[in-house]
Image 1 (cartoon, rainbow, N blue to C red):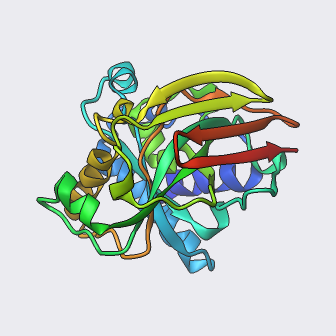
Image 2 (image 1 turned 135 degrees about the horizontal axis):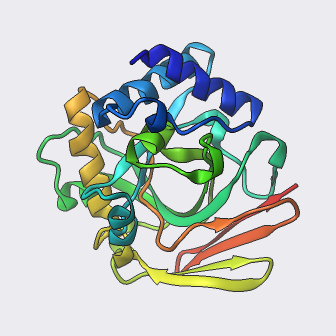
Length: 257
């Protein structure tokens, strides 16, 4: 398959906020390695155009989502400075296609993590602080009809993210038991605990560090890592307001226009 052609189709769809046909329908023999090559091709283009990679996101961390796509491990995507929405600012629907909201914990690393062999203990040791976060996922693939390789090629179906302003030291919370509430327009939509994320959100970060070592990539000091959704994604439209709160850790909100 032509990696560069597929990457360019995805990049233009993202820039123009329009949908394209399912990639794996066109290329049924596409492998996971092919899909990550396409993702990395577009990240290289964005960096060349002036964007800065400031972290990564982990997806498919729940067993329900893994079973839905027939996989047994998460996937990942890149976060750039252009994707960050400041809390209090509006998120423009003009830049999005079919957005959904996910609530999760963001890790900020104060030490570099390089796999293989990274453990949960290593993640705890390397984390400066954690904050509530909202990931705005979006698919450039028509009607969200995707499989694993489609979403990997499409940067893990990531679009934007918002970070809360209250920083918590990782040793001050139990990552498995901390509770999350997701509200839409003041109505409670879903609740969950950190254990929904692969048993422990820190396990998802450890997986990411080890997975990246296959591509000779490390998690760098200062990187922001979105560890994966605690509950199912919720569709968003103009004028919606979402708030994600974690017990004892504060909250984060985003407004759409």
